Image (cartoon, rainbow, N blue to C red; front, side, top):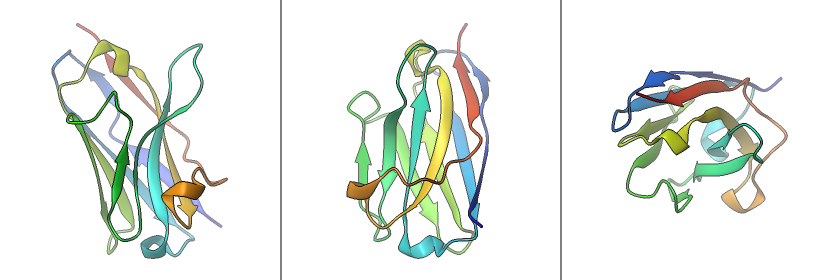
Length: 120
């Protein structure tokens, strides 16, 4: 069965950086689109960044130029490098994987979520 395990969240000051990781198993990782979503208290879950099997990427306008999504097919892992973090980036971040393309995301497969808190 598909498993997605996130790591790397935590507390960081405004302007700081964090890198999230999501290790996948039980899927043909290299042929699937992968992505990161986030959900802040009282808000709907939203797409942050996605990466297709071929490497093309898609970002929410709010994170363009600050966040970078990447993947390592050999390690079956997707990363989210987050720089210049702002308090409004505070949320639970979820990994999603298994969709055939970015257009068909999200799939039904989610990680357990990792908390990111940006605060001084």
